[in-house]
Length: 200
Image 1: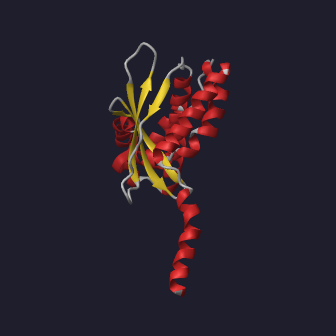
Image 2: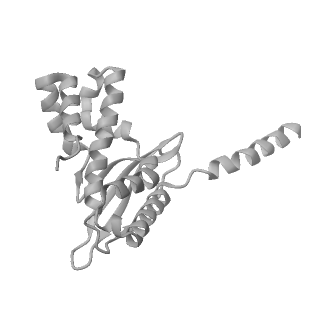
Image 3: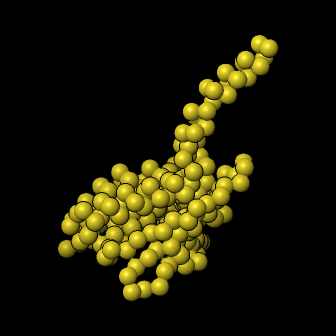
């Protein structure tokens, strides 16, 4: 009887923690809604004003992205030859690169919507794809899928696939070529150069 009570107590204590992790499609839906609502209400965001967009992304999007996993995926087997310090720098520079790409894309917002499809997560699964459709007036829908995995901080995005093309993997060939020619330090130099603010 005491053992049964202990098990029930353990279950009750565990329930809030188990329920504290939102399912992956809810994460995507929440982030997408918050970003698009913010853009609709702000002329600065609609025009792609850089500081406003970066502030929005840092607040709403970045906490839900696993940039380390994205960087590891982009480098492929070259990730293994990087030192821990180089890996940290690569993650930082790749995050800046993706942030710059996303910053420029928000300036093209003109009333588009994202339709997030319900995702069934198999029991015990820690990696899923959340499928979406990007709806733009006067244009056919565009599929936008989010590759997500479960981390101690909840479900996080590590890749975005647009109409079958992985944004992260699109960099792998370029990165591999730079590493072959100039090593990991050469790749870091290339990324740092790309991330320099544009000169007026």
